[in-house]
Length: 336
Picture 1 (tube, rainbow, N blue to C red):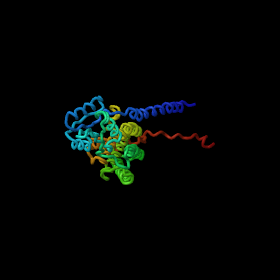
Picture 2 (picture 1 turned 45 degrees about the vertical axis):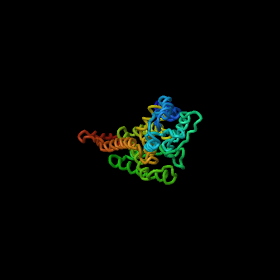
Picture 3 (picture 1 turned 180 degrees about the horizontal axis):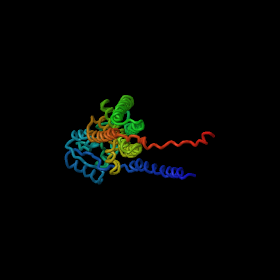
Picture 4 (picture 1 turned 90 degrees about the vertical axis):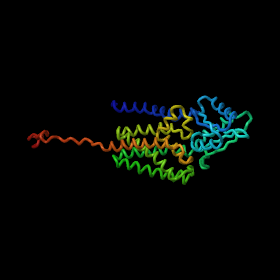
């Protein structure tokens, strides 16, 4: 057999297990290591009861980042501002837990269990959901499942623009137009039809559109710099790492370090955080996610525009003076 087909066969045999290994590492490893790591929580009320609750949280070294608040009103405001995921409040009747299932149903359940452990033995801790997840999606499953389709849409947009040969400003405008339409369609489905988003309709559409634009621009920008290999690199970066490290189905603070932080610097994680903020928290704590997505979009579109402006080398033509002389066919051959 020829050597080239043999090398291709060996490459396939080795590449498939490698891809499976990377996929399991990216998706299964963070999911198997879910645990609170500096998870922001609040404790409100007067000492010494509040001090005792804070001490019990801090006994779990590295699990919680405790913020103190003067009273229940301040703790509720901090939850709505997304400064903390929940708060344990000291009241005359005993401790009360404030949560926000819209921020993360997984964290709400975790805090419920932690509050029961922190409270005095035999004490029942009532739970109040300050910012509840919508009735149509109480477990946050739909929101978590929406990030992968958005990532695939962005990768597809960047790949199609590249493969169709669109370049420069035309490519950038095409990516922007596709992102706007994806944002509108996604808002129609998630907000108007499924009812799993509860914020301002146009703001949600804008958040989705910005996410898709950041992803599509990143893929197209890498392709403009590296050729079609950039599409594969962009797909690995966005789908394999960005989606699995996003923390949308749990919370970034529940993922192994530094996976949670890395995920928030990639478009899927930033997009998920932005969509959650505008859908349930009136845009609070959305600034970091907007900045991250804007940087990805700006850098990607800059690469697309500048890459499209490069002049391709003109095809070389032979010098007429050095053209190869025509070979005259022998007379005998013509006669024959």
